[in-house]
Image 1 (cartoon, rainbow over the protein chains, first blue to last red):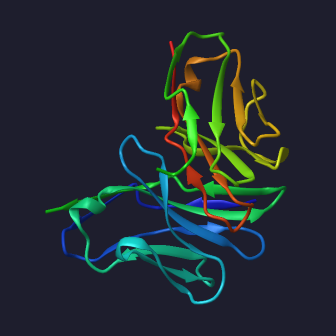
Image 2: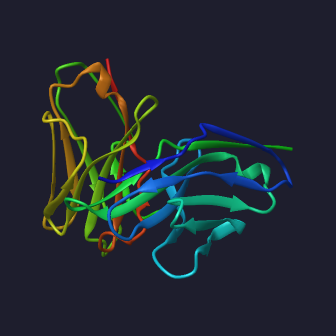
Amino acid sequence: AQSVAQPEDQVNVAEGNPLTVKCTYSVSGNPYLFWYVQYPNRGLQFLLKYITGDNLVKGSDGFEAEFNKSQTSFHLKKPSALVSDSALYFCAVSGNTGGFKTIFGAGTRLFVKA
Amino acid sequence: DSGVTQTPKHLITATGQRVTLRCSPRSGDLSVYWYQQSLDQGLQFLIHYYNGEERAKGNILERFSAQQFPDLHSELNLSSLELGDSALYFCASSLRQGEEKLFFGSGTQLSVL
């Protein structure tokens, strides 16, 4: 079975500081890992994905994520947070267990304070 | 704009009723996924269709059913509605399945009174 855990309901950072949103996963076989962002009253938007290759994945708007196979983690990072980054962030894992399905974590709300 | 269209945007109905939510995927996308988002359950995977065939089921209740039509649009049918079915229902599409990123619609907000 696939599962995703986001241990923090909320992350608070000051503008200009680095941010990290944590994610751990469980899936059989090689994982396909994703980060999505949701702004109020909107659908989820794709940020970045890891399929294979370099463990550091770069996405849009300065976001990046590091895949760590031994720790089964895929943490989202950004060197310098912006107030406009405040949103709900979801980690997701996709795998072929009884059919392809993409399972999402519970979400982490990021607040960036000016 | 993701290119995924969901209708209606809002739906208010009563317990015991039946509703149909509609999703039009991005042009060319063969996969359609349905998700339910609520405050207490988070984003729950319901069902996945690929090119008209059901490919995976998640935590979908027996009162719920879905299908993907030959033109690739999909409908999610919710029957014998209960108060707890009130949620935001999202449709997402992708070109194929598995490693593909998902494009989400804006959702249908269902309120069961």
